[in-house]
Length: 247
Image 1 (cartoon, rainbow, N blue to C red):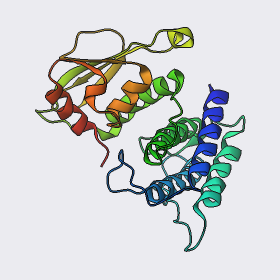
Image 2 (spheres, rainbow, N blue to C red):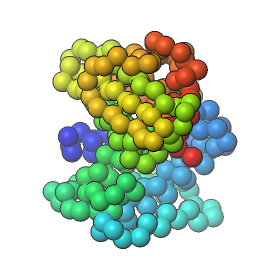
Image 3 (cartoon, rainbow, N blue to C red):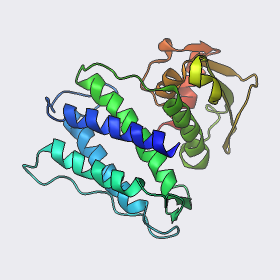
């Protein structure tokens, strides 16, 4: 898995650096209020922050967020420098060393997955903004992304409420080739105090069916619900996703 994550991170890094040479003023429809330049600066700061966090011992204070590029600095080379720092950091056998994370003690390997997924999602955002050819998100990356989303929501992000209390079944419909070996179903149970999740088939108040990439994009609110199959009340699913949104 480590080699696959690193390969995905490197490929998406190349795509983003290419896009940094284009028009940075174009809006990013999937990140309202941001231009392409804003998105790339955000991502470069996250990469620099993660490089520090992945080498920070568990229990230490929240690492400082990465610095913005200095005035006049070209975004492409600046972004590449942060990505190269991550590449060196993660291309090591020491990925299981303890590290700080924002959901409790973890490892550098946790940060490899987090940054691969962060970069993959924002690569997709950037290609949408630039009206570039959309490189597909492979099923393995998307399955990791859905797993991580469930873990982060249950550990930190989900905001329980009466409106968001429900059960949701995510069902992947892509079953060809390597996808057969990947998780295909996720079951989320939200009440007024917490969110729990597991793999497996259970009947929920709402079911969402699509390929893994489409499921991952939909739960991150990159795709409208009209582009996936929703069994149940779409308005209730919207309430659930609003309670899951990252501020």
